[in-house]
Image (cartoon, rainbow, N blue to C red):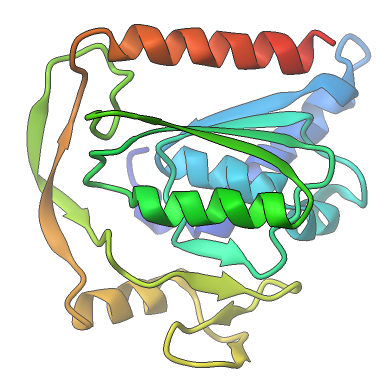
Length: 217
């Protein structure tokens, strides 16, 4: 997304639910069978949009997405209560992702399951970020990444808890936490993106099976 840094992660997630609200209001659309798919930052957006603490506030209790597919998402912001209610979550990611942390995403998926949600994660051996592109591997030297930065948690009302603190701080915003990560030495430059072999085909097959199963029944 060009210029994504201008907007908060919460704003991106809200946009997903705003789209759900518009679509579900249309007579030709079954509002009970609307899903959302996002890649990278978009993957983070659909995971947040699936979280009941966020969705209940944005579109009302019990309303929202039937299912979400998050492709190689960033899970640096997570709710303390990550429950997703009835929304089914599927995550596809490469275990050699240099842009987002597979371990952080594994923890996020497990937290959703422990909260009673249905979340599955498939790691693709040797796959990099954006492995579904269908283009050869390339090095993006200007990429700004901070894979090892600690997770920042959010309370039920959306207030951040700084990784070095115990109490929520309603004044904290995304940028504050990014600046902290950089000053703490977690920032780095450069990441590889692209596809090896049949990775894009494997991604597409998994994606189609998920949507056919969750939205056609």
